[in-house]
Image 1 (cartoon, protein in one colour):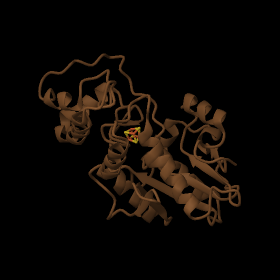
Image 2 (cartoon, rainbow, N blue to C red; image 1 turned 90 degrees about the vertical axis):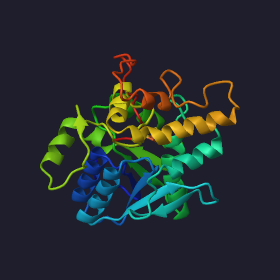
Image 3 (cartoon, rainbow, N blue to C red; image 1 turned 135 degrees about the horizontal axis):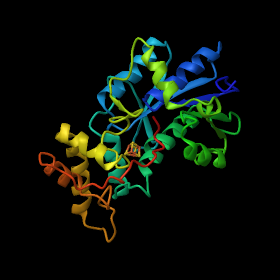
Image 4 (cartoon, protein in one colour; image 1 turned 60 degrees about the vertical axis):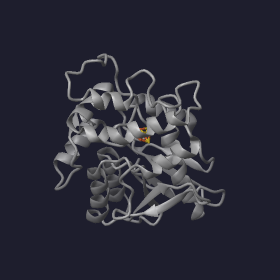
Length: 284
Ligand code: SF4
């Protein structure tokens, strides 16, 4: 039974339909939920609809979801809630300021620092993910994401703690994006963000640099103001002028976010068709 809890388990909830589906299965398959902690790590660049969805899952399903955010303090995180969660990229901006360069497709420190590490710091603060209380870390990766499944299975434990074992119940159960879509079509509520071929255009950070170029451009064309924060981060890091490489760009193989914003009202065809999304460990 892939959804059966084997002991203390942290379910990593990304705020997307797939991990919410996983949460529902876990709730349905376990009468005793005392071993379960559900965590959502907010970057501040999530769409408001994602925050509403996380809140609604918690309320409708009567389950506590721990909302966490990265902080540059001794603890390394803060517990927030729907009302106090950052909405202007504050946790993301803080980690960029601390590192003084931007994440990019090769160095994706944003996922690691704001999500994986934050969850582990929180779990350690309550005595979990330790020699005394090893845990399972449940992640919403589906059977139709074989590369991600293989990568995680090869690693076994998480990069953050040898006392946390990665478990992938959706992959074990053979769940695909089709199953997830079917499930949500039958529910009385849903994430209020559109999908294209099962992909949520505005899921995770709104203009995440791992999204396909067409996806990014179509978001900017519809809502140009969404590019402002990303452009600001690029120009702020650039103004420090310490870079010989590409540390002041989220993507060196694309126009800057400011350029994309500037071109957003023109016929815009500077992206190659082959510029696809890169699989993101932030999850769906
Ligand atoms: S969604 Fe993209 S930008 Fe946001 S934390 Fe994940 S990898 Fe980084």
